[in-house]
Length: 315
Length: 294
View (tube, rainbow over the protein chains, first blue to last red):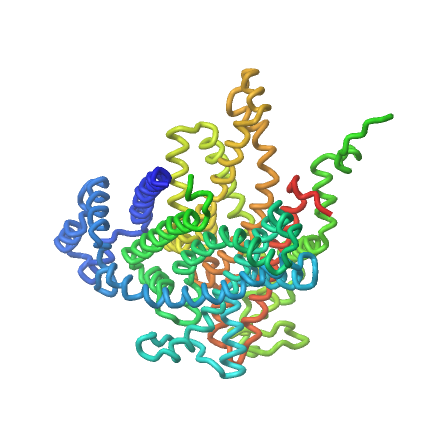
């Protein structure tokens, strides 16, 4: 197992290195001279421009700029927001709990709908329940989140007046109000996760149910309930758990448009605002952070896979 | 006494794999429905100048935010433009962005993947790490960042989506190349002195086509959502040119008194994306040689 872990780390480190090139490279794609943007009113003053360039290391060769940037990132310095005049790392830490709350709620909703639906449709294969579950999953996967969000606001907030259409209240301020402001976006994101998890659970259950040990279990005279719940499900859930972890990572990073529509001040809103303000250090910081979260969670997924799969543990 | 070996019905009929796939796909009624919807949308997009009842960018101060009626089936928007005509013209931007960006992604990703798989060693390690690094950035965030750095325009959105998608095809092609490398017939071809590029083009590429078709179709569905998302954010199709994503964005402000502005373009995105997903699923079932069930 240790050898495997080392091998995995041996893959992750170069990936992270390449990632750092890519993110640093984004800076080079940037239209216009950052010094000119930063100088603002004083853009005519060559002295000011020279000073800004020196501060940002823009007057050094590219490889020196890169090493300087990498050194900063490794010590947790993600640069300085051009607009909000705040360290990017601080901004990100501020938004992370909001997005995390949304992601976890969406993940719970997605799992609670998707996994049971997948089990049901595998057990009742080619029957009405299977057909319905497949239709729901396809709907969850094919509906663009932003449209579904707008339609929900139209129905629940505008027509019925049950929930506030937008805004966010932190959990620490008012628990129920916080849930009320995040339940709709969480549901929107959750349906998508449910669709993905349902399909994978169904496939895994169908594979598990066709195995020899299931036939043996049935032949032994075990009830169908025991066969499904104790024998098939426990094996089918192994790939589902790994996949769920990846989905959680996707949620933590991928709520961009949903946050935009429900005006939730999380990660997605941060990156979109940064794009429009041409606040490139923030864009870079968000790309870097989301990628790190994703890499970390896929490592967790692998570890979980090892932990719950006894066959791999012994190897 | 004759010895009969069980052969699949398709082999007995002397059917080619492609024909068998078509037959299987056509049996998949819901996938055929998806294909029909796509054909209708493609026709609508191509014939937009002739079938759109109004000019999609023509504003009218006498017809602002009118509810759907006989004159304007889908109503009019905040500038008095006909929503149906805009949805029809918007099909062009969406379908083009979806198809072109996936084609570009395939054109970038497949050769790189084949090279990585065949070359092995350092080349493979470097190319695979680049693909991994790109795949570790969430799809939409990478697309938004690229589109932002490239500047807002439909072409740039398409480039951003294509670049973001290419590592998926790198992985797919690399995997197929690795599979092929270990087969006897590639071994034989190599023993006969065929150069690697010839093996890649003649022996591996044809085998990649079925999974590529499936992955490509599903990718188009995602690319259409991505284009709509970028346009929604103002990073894709620029106003006043119509696109489903940007229509949804402006519709948000008038949800209370003009909900039709949000319903129709969104429904169009949903229908097209659903159809590509249906066709993709149908193709997967039709092309998977192991799935000879029923």
